[in-house]
Length: 118
Image 1 (tube, rainbow, N blue to C red):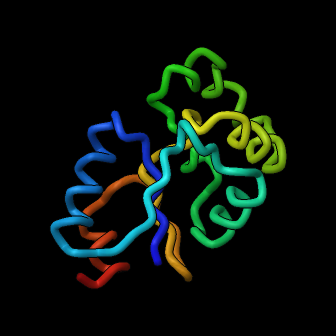
Image 2 (cartoon, rainbow, N blue to C red):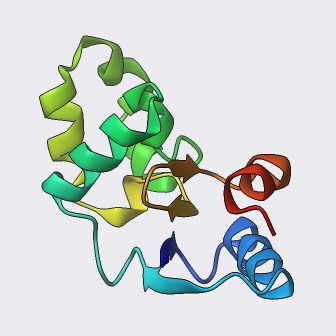
């Protein structure tokens, strides 16, 4: 079963959830604010996604801005970035859709359709 990791108040997450429901795709819902991804999960998802690690950061979030991560990320190691992401779910870009052999970060309908084949 797919894991759908989101922040329920986020409008993009609401759109993604509606899309999953309309396409009758089964998933396990997880609130990223209440159940923060662990370092192990983030490391696994990052490796599985094939994306640059900075794509996992919620760059429009208040926490990202208050920590001035735009300036700090380029000098951080992967390990430091993953440890930082594991400290607070609000730093992580969402929604995340995690399947057996893929990880999607953010909601792009065409990409989600291709991976879930509704």
